Amino acid sequence: MPNPILLPVLNWARKLRYPTLFKVTATLFAITLLVPDPFPFVDEILFGLGTLLLANWKDRKAPIEQDPRT
Image 1 (tube, one colour):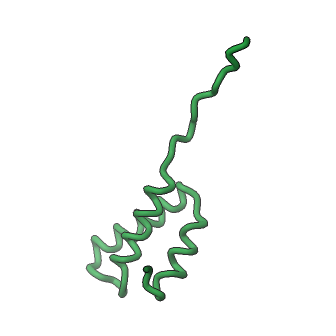
Image 2 (cartoon, helix red, strand yellow):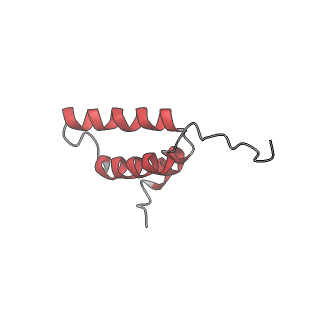
């Protein structure tokens, strides 16, 4: 069960598309590397964003199926 404090952040992040979600996750990760624990629950937010990022990761160009009758 998600933490009630983190739930609004993860609900907001679920609505983001892949490039934007990747940028938000990468930026937060870089901030965490430079400043250890800049604000509370940053690690949990990163885990949630990483999970959403992997869930949204898919092939952008699916092969086009051709009609076998032609």
